Image 1 (cartoon, one colour):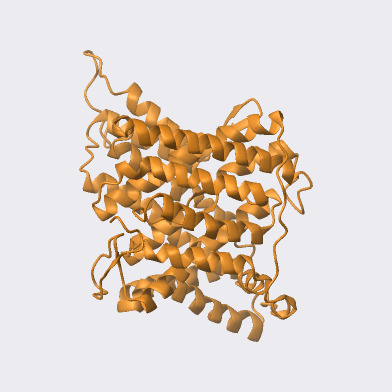
Image 2 (tube, rainbow, N blue to C red):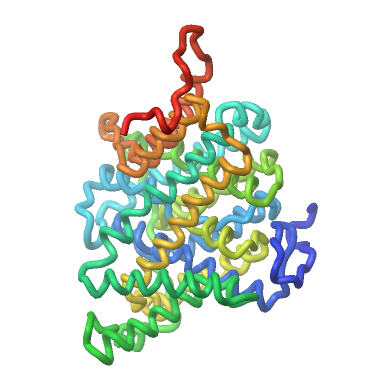
Length: 439
């Protein structure tokens, strides 16, 4: 596909839609908007946890998505959003307490920009030198594990932090049951939009139970009425310091792992070889991070949430992300829409997150199945088993002021274990099996 804006139209809603294909524009617009909703919770939450302006983050995620599309020539379906990998480093660099505005954001922005520049440089090297070495260090047992860990590592977020009462917990259950029923008992476009339709249905149920029957915290629509339709977000310029750079630039290793896992997952699911685009993907993500940090936004990364949406809808068209990118930019410029999203009940968003994160984890298992990973082999068994626990338990390694969280330790643990255990000793005992493992 030499022209990234050239897609073949596929009208059959029952088949998989490949990256170079698209549905008719009405369906494409609707599904593109669904991708915006899928990333919205995380793209809003990440800047809030670092004290950034969420509207800047949303707008730059949209611009970053369009940049990624152009740099990769429309070959990799992906949405770029605020990366959670920066939270620990930014908090350390700015001494941020975790709530309210971050008065030292410019210091963090300088580190984010430099991290993005290093990311671009690595992408250029990969694009020039080839990706054969990546295949050797990331076989299916590793990539499947990394993708599964992404979903499992995020699992505690909706369960632990997005339900503050018994009613909220029940609403999470109602939400994911709504989505499951739509997935199984509907068809066509309705099934394709199961997350968005499920979110709307659950919100209506929440309104009836909370606002009309008084069973939970009522939805307050007054912020929507008070917010203006259009308003520029609060841009900020970066300040460059060595101390902040030393803390934030190392995050690039996690971004590379996340991006690589994303590409491998998409390639496996769609049956396409995307290795020749890996370098471009790194470059596109790096450029987006540089631009975001230059105006007050967070670092960018390819979003696992959107892999879950694509796995559920079986639509991998890159046209969706043109729509999603443009919509995200417009939303970043609209405080009123931001107020609407903030009015979506937290437990409803939690229920949607449970579904999305679960789909991500299953996408990793699917990589194992489709590539026939042999778990009777001790090496494969341990390369998958240990990182799964590291990521799910959020095993964190502290290297001075830099903290490598559960996702990072699991990712690099899988890669390093695969290399360490690649050569078997002659006196190695019989292969460890799941049945023989200690209980």
